[in-house]
Length: 184
Image (cartoon, rainbow, N blue to C red; front, top):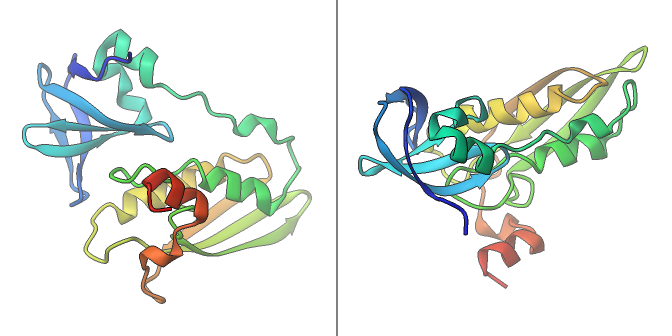
């Protein structure tokens, strides 16, 4: 069974969920991992939920870093090779920090366009929404999506915009997402 409780070994930058505020959790803080998906970890500490970025997983100590570090698999795409399917696959590695379903299967991605810049280089434009308009995690989730798209070898740049039309509803969750959430 995986260890889920840790004592932070250093001061650690964290994102307060759902507000989206960046703050510091202090060395010695006891945290409990509630979700670890897509290379980020959601922890409960001091009566709140926080998201730790992959670059900060060492703060969980050697056991935590070993347990929760995810190897990026984007390298399976050959340089100069591009497909919108590769972008969709990258987006499926992005997760809402409170919901164990990726943003594609949650139905948060409304549009994906790719512009061929020539010489095997592409610019990608994504329109996404959130499950709630007041969620402060939007910029963090969008930045995660942008970073993962831009990690694709043929992508020169990506722009991920948050939109509110149409308003998201649970009906937008895919069958796979519904299964994960126990809604089928």
